Length: 258
Image (cartoon, rainbow, N blue to C red; front, side, top):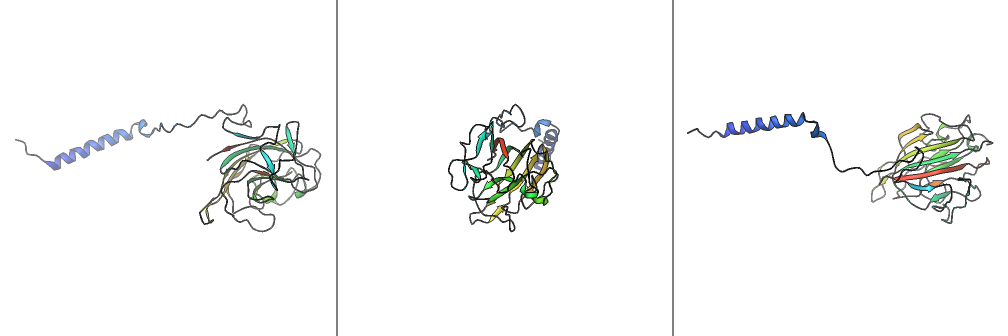
């Protein structure tokens, strides 16, 4: 009778397992993932058109999804010819819906006959999170930066008073321009302290100008940025008080990412 040898049996089992592992490592199926299956999203007919899962914020017909930032009354800017033009006498407008992380598309136009210079030339802004009734929040600058000199962290596509764009991709006045933005909202602890900062990725007219840029807080005209805890917030468009002709917007949509 053959004597039972537990050591030999264990060594044989280890050898078999090693051979099986070697086969698995050589099998391309070992690294295939089948679930969960991503949901189907139908893209727009063009890259600027809203995909099937987008929330259309302005379709050229109505500002029904917007309100005045100062008092939440109906948005009073001028809708005409498929666009909306800033009314500087009424103030900022913001979305009625609130958001956290998202992908945003909007198009804007500086008037062809724009006057003024520096910050007084087509000035406006998109606040990626509006945290108050005025200019509070996190602003990406909008203004005429085509052959118009100003401080670089205040030109078009800058994170206002924080980060200049990587390049100046501005088109001349009268031409439509686009922003495509990925916004990662800041996260706060229960006590209001910052757990993770906000980030912005921005394409201006298809050109990358902010590459996962970390924000150091909300944007201020005077003083350094600082964070203030919030959960979700509207998206806000600015009616800047400079004396140049008002700018216009069209084709605004957002894809919430959480």
